[in-house]
Image 1 (cartoon, chains in turn yellow, purple):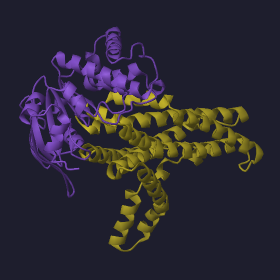
Image 2 (cartoon, one colour):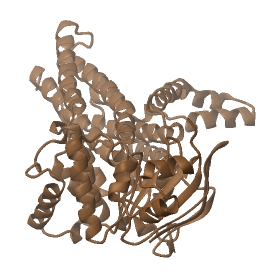
Image 3 (cartoon, each protein chain N blue to C red):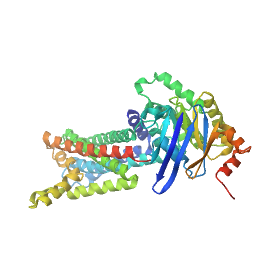
Image 4 (cartoon, chains in turn green, cyan):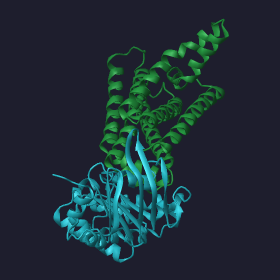
Length: 256
Length: 244
C-alpha cells in the first residue's frame, strides 16, 4: 500500500489541478484579507480575515475532497493504469485504501498551508490582538471533517461507480446532514419512543459536520475542552472507519 | 502452464463465455483471436480476477488461482487501452510497479534498481528516458513503457490484450522482435489480437474464440495442416462459418 500512497501523492503534487488549488487558496485568502480591509463587519480586520479565510478555505478543501479523488481514480480506470496496478496486488482493497490515505494526506497538507496563510495575514494586520495558536482548532477540525467527507465519497464511488454521481450525492448528504442538525432537539422534545428513535437515527446517521466547526472559538479566542475535542475525534473516527471499511469491501469485490 | 476449464461468464442475460476450455503450454507464444465482442478481454479479466466467472476453473502450474492469490507475482499484464500516469517520470512509474509487487526493503540497492530500470527501458526502445515525464512521451512510446512495466518483476507469464493496437509499423516490428526474444528466453506469452497475419508470423499456438465458444485451440502449424490452408485468415473464416 505504501507505493500507492507515495506515488499518488507525488503525481497529484505535480498535477496542474493541485497546483491550481494551491494558487486558488492563496487568492481566496488574499480576497478575505481585502474583504476584511474594505468591509469591517467584525470590528477588527484580523477577525474578518480569520472568518472569511477559514470559510473560503473550508469550501475549497471540501470541493477538492469531493471531486479530485474520484475523478483521479475514474481517469486511472479509463486509461487502463488502474488495471495494471490491480494486476500486481492481491486485493483491490489495498489500492482503494492506499488512494484514500494519499488524498487525505494531500488534504491535510492543504489545510495546514491554509492555516499558515490565514494566520500570517491575520498577524500582519494586527499582531498584538491575535493569538495565532487558536488556529490549531481550525486545522484539527478540518482534518477530521475532510476524513469524513473523503470516506463518504469513497464509499459512494465504490457503490455507484460514477465520479459525478458520487461527488454530488456526497454533497447532498452533507447538505442534509446540516439540515438535520436540529433533529437532536426535536428528538429530545419528542414524546413518542419511535419518533425519538427516528430523530436520533437521523441525527447520528447523517454526517454532522457541525462537530468540526470551531470558528467561533477561534475568533473569540476561547479554549475548547479536551472532552469536546475527543468527542469530535471519536465521531470522525467511527464515521470514517465505517465508511472506509464498507468502501474497501465493496470495491474489493466489485467486478471491473 | 495456464489451464482454463469450462469457463462460463455472463453479464446479465448476455452470455460472453460459454464453457471455454483452454490449455496454454509452458513457454508457448499463444495467440488468442476473435471478432469484437467474442469474449477475449473477458477471458483475460477472469484470469486476472477483475471479474468472477459463474463457473469453471483457472489454474496456473496446477494450482487454482482462487487458492493461490500470489499468482499475480508471476504475471505481467498490459491492458488494451493503456496510458500511464502522465505526471510521473518513466523511471518512477516502473519503480512504482516494481514496488507494488515486492517489499521495498527487499528491493536491490538504489543504484541496482536504477540500472534495472534503464536496462528495461533500453529493452523496449526507450533508452535514456528514465527521467522524462510520461506527459512528454508520444503514444507509441507510452505503449512501450506499458510493455516495460509488464517486465519489471521478471514474470514467467505475459498477458497482453491487443498489444499491437496503436503502434506504427516500426513499433509493431520492434514489438514482434521483443516478443520473440522473450519467448526465446522461455517466457510464456498469451496475447489477444485481431490481426491474423501477425499471429501467423509470431505464434506457436493459436486459439479462436467466437460468440463465447472456443472454436479451435492448437499449434498454428497443426491448424493450417488440418484445414489444408496456407494462411490463418482462411482457417479463421471457415471456423467462424463466415458467409459474405
